[in-house]
Each structure stands twice: as C-alpha cells, then as structure tokens.
Length: 139
Length: 139
Image (cartoon, rainbow over all chains, first blue to last red; front, top):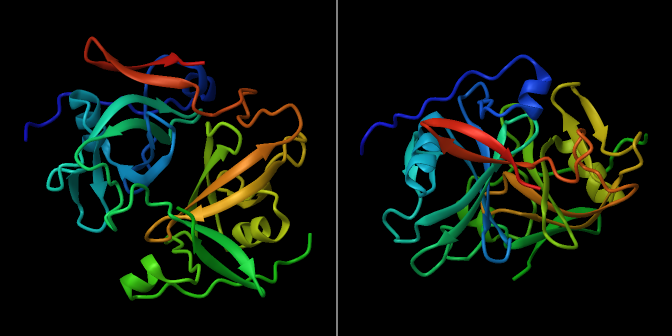
C-alpha cells in the first residue's frame, strides 16, 4: 500500500477559523484519532461508528474507499478488504469543531457492515425494565 | 437535579454475551465515556456526535431527555437547558461491542442543535482540491 501524500495542517486555536474556515484541520484526540460515523448513502441508516488516524483519513480521501484505525489490532484497516464488503464513500463531512467525520457510503459485496453479519452494528435497542437496562433486537 | 438510580453492570469479558446478550453493559473508555451519535427521529439527519458518562446515560434513560458529558466544561450537560432546544429521545440503540449509542431525538424549541445556530453540526463537506483538504458548506 502506498503511503499517503495528503497532509493535515494542525487545527487553529481560533474558534471561528475552526468553525467557519475553509481548511479541513481535523482535531485528532490524545490517541491521534477522530470519530467516524458511517451511514448508508441510500437510506441514511447508521451502519457503524469507528475511528480514524491521519493515515486512515488521508487514504479514505485519496481512494474513495473507507479506511479506519483498528484500535483492537492497532493497525490500518481497509474495511471489507477480506469480506469484499468495501465501503465506497459518496461524501465526507465534518462537524463544527472538526473532531468527527460523517461518511456516507455504499457498501459492496453482500452489504453487511457488522462483523456479526448484520447490515448495521446498531441492531439492539436499550430500554429500562424493572430498573435494569436491557437490550432487544430492533431489526 | 436528583442523582440517578440506574446502574450499569461491568461489561462481560465474553464476546458473545456482549454481542448477543440481553443486558446493556456499556463499555466506557479510559475517560469513562462512550460515544453518542444523535440523529433526527423524523428524517434521520445526523445532528451531532457527543459523549456520555454513566451519569449522563442513566439520566437520559430515566428522563427521556438527552444528557451528555461536556468534555470542555467537565460537567453534566442537559442539552438545550438554556436554549430551550431540548432533545426528546425516541429511541436509544447500541452497537455490537456496546461502546457507542445512537439516540433518535426530536429537538424542541427552534430546532437548532449546533451552537453555531445551524440545525446540524455537520454542515461542511470535505474535499481534496489541489492536494489540500478543504471544506465547503453543504446546506
């Protein structure tokens, strides 16, 4: 895999530059990561929440295929590389303080995003029952 | 504000209990936080990404009004308490490894979620132009 050529400038200390400026200067956290929210570009369903370091973010912008940072494996993760369920990125947006990104994607292969085989990782609702927080399948 | 009575059991070390079990055992990170993705219950628009500690999550489940942990102010944050744009929670779901939640909400008041006055915090798209990552307003 080729190294990315895209570089991100450090975030401005000026809040208005961060919120209204034209330069994308992602605010990586102490671990060098930002949060990535991933939705289906077709119907808007939330598919997963993951994390990106600068390399993953640059690769995603350069290739149009979603890359993440796997915190469990401590490695760059081209989602779907083995399963074939690659995520083709239709748009990337960022929030007011530039510490999160939204990826709208079309999932290739058989369309599963969750490693459990489900379309979305968010397959259970939380409710309080008899004073305990319990889960029920929502799909 | 009354203290919450809802308590969360520690996450199971058993992956299948975490992924397929019936008990909600949120996996708070080293800072005691989980990621909260907030969408409009009506049309699914991503409104914001925030963080919750156990207290914020319990308050949200108990009251049906979204509470977060403000990392900048280091305090519990009842979103919209001063602006009137309270978030009324229609459903909460969690992901496979229980380290993120999705809140589907209806926003009260004049409906703004972002502190900049916009409906959503995700108001700018990221693109690469002449080798630089730049932002353009999307709404």
